[in-house]
Amino acid sequence: MYRELEHTADLRYEVFSENLVEFLKDLIGIIKENLEYEEAVISDFKVKCYKLLKNLNDDVVFDVVNDIISLIDRKYLPESVQDVCITFKKVLVTNLKIKALTYHMLSVSVDNFGKISATLVFDI
Image 1 (cartoon, rainbow, N blue to C red):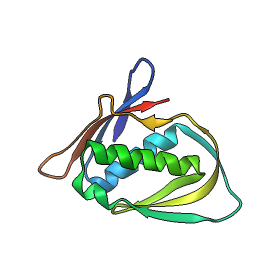
Image 2 (image 1 turned 45 degrees about the vertical axis):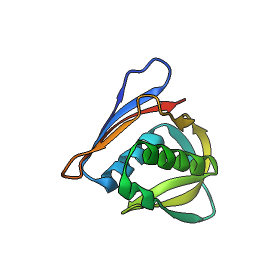
Image 3 (image 1 turned 180 degrees about the vertical axis):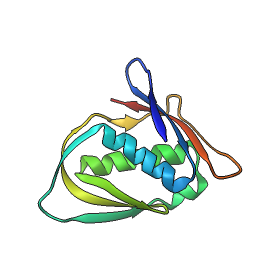
Image 4 (image 1 turned 90 degrees about the vertical axis):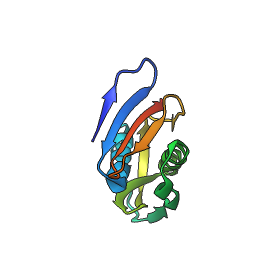
């Protein structure tokens, strides 16, 4: 689950996830919410595994989210999540509102039950 919070110039979200897979799905949901695209004619897929997510912290989230944004810039849209792996499909990206995740107010924490909470601010 995630929600957008008011922020003067950028996009700010709070994320509350039950586990790592849900957290990745929430991150992808945020990105897709700020993206317009068209399906590509060619069926081209990539699978990328982010094993560093097993040691979740601010730096890891920063790197993974910005890598996902970079793949979208190269016209690959996150399609599905399995464990720490994301399947990306080729698309024709027309408008990605988000430029990058910033370190400003970035905060990620995991409780004893594996639930994840985060505050994320994206440069637009």
